[in-house]
Picture 1 (tube, rainbow, N blue to C red):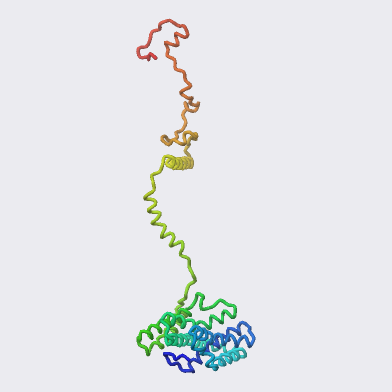
Picture 2: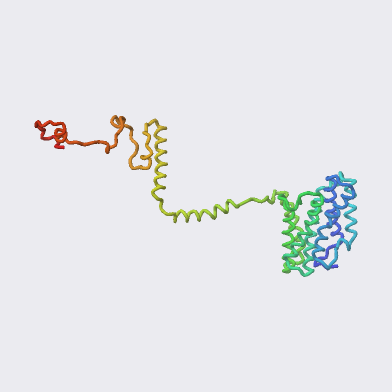
Length: 317
């Protein structure tokens, strides 16, 4: 059997296992299990964490099997709750206190055993946390429920983890060795009840992918905008055409008349559209269709040779 760094009285280990068994038995009774199921769940909740620790430590035996009194006590607790479940519910506050105390005690016992086995601080903390919450996790797995220690809510597994860290650091570095176990128990109980009283709760996962992506892409976009090449003529014409459509729409909303522009005129934005005049209403012909003939040539074609008196201010052509 492995000697622990901290001497724990047997009655305290019995209390830790018994309170875990009562908690598991009440969960099984509420789920309407039979007496065999209630007794098994009580044993699993009370002793499974320590059994997992001893299996991981190896070569030191399983403490629960070396002390069969612990197994028998958990089974008796399950039978009592099975037949007197209503009376057990009246003791819920006391059972909760003992349950939290058992979590703290199993954390202290497991961390001290791990350190005595020659493990480093991190493996000792892991084994201490597994022992503290392992029974409740296996209970929920056997009852086909989501493990309460893994769910968002009041501090439970986190409190056990913090207590194991404090005890391992104080014990390994010889900082107030005599008060390390007491500090662990007080810290676990304090965090547990403070979370219930002040409403401290762990939160479910939240996705920050969009926030990080925007934060990373913002400077990249800024640099890209600075090094962007100047716009070409086609892109500038498209923008001007969009501004022109917006101006025409706004003018029509205000009751002004704006002439429709032809397809050829849409590409040119040098002149704005103007209301049609009387001369343009008839329709302007193409200048290339006009034939320009001076007056002298017209007289020669018609055959009029008479010299008429010319106005000195009249143009010759």
